[in-house]
Length: 201
Length: 246
Image (cartoon, rainbow over all chains, first blue to last red):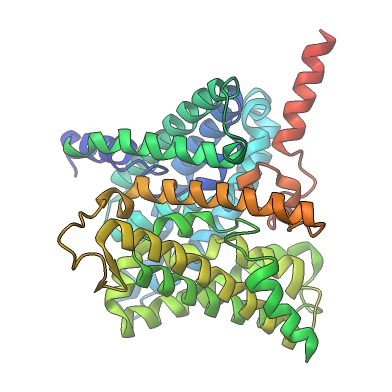
């Protein structure tokens, strides 16, 4: 079992130090596309936390008990090469399933997250987290903590960005830089700021 | 034959995925810290894109409309797995440098976008040429960005010292780090804004950016995955209308 200190290290490391958007460049599309308003950005961030936490648990289970099953491996059948195919399909199905479940059972949560769920299916952060869990050889608990913390990192980044963008609207920006360009410059400055955390671990 | 050359021209210049359509931004930012990484990523994406276009075009009449997206994803994911293992076997250093971004080609919007908008409606040979054109366009985009970042950040081009051999040159290391990616892309987008305006004045407007970058889900290649769903911008409008009523 992993100690609490190790889990905390994984959490801080993936939420702040190696921020998923600002230093690993996963989930850039929603980060730039859905960050016009703080409210929408928080909704998107919430949906990502929800999906990544569930999906890292489910993909972790599937990897441990089906793909890397010790019984099958002892019989000479190693299915781990199927991980990319299995993970993306599981994630796509999972997002659809979560959406249906929320719609039926928790309508209030669906109201706030529902619109963003289908957009997450092909979000590279979700697949990236699942694949990284395998590469870093995390166990189930570490994987879920890693997934949750990564998604919290995404939430922090997208909400900060939305807050800054709301301010930028009132600024006088050169015509050429209006729109995506100034957002990318902002992302660059945020990325520099987040580099300051790199000494923490 | 003309039709095929037109496809290549379309992919490399007219609808260049990096500069004009602004698709596949995750790999564009993540792997362009050096020119060779950009080139490697571009070429592996091209291989996957060409094969995926060919297979999807061959099976376009067999795949039922309702399950086409899962079917495309399986095809693309299988091809990506093949490319991933080939690179691990024969190009170890490149494979190590690109890391998780190789399996992440699966979720690259260019590939599913081309499958949905071209290969699923057109014959195999034309689809292959469409894949080659788009793939080369992407490769050129990544390599150019990689060249700029490597030149400014390390003073080398393809690991060959260019600026680094001069005594007065100090590498601006930030360009090969994460913030440099955002900075270079920002100036690229700004530059394209100028080009876009000039072309519009000439009466030859460029194709609009099509990715999530614009926040406009309607033009997204993957919109089929969320088809029938209200897009975020529509919801925002509806909310604003509600607020106005109250």
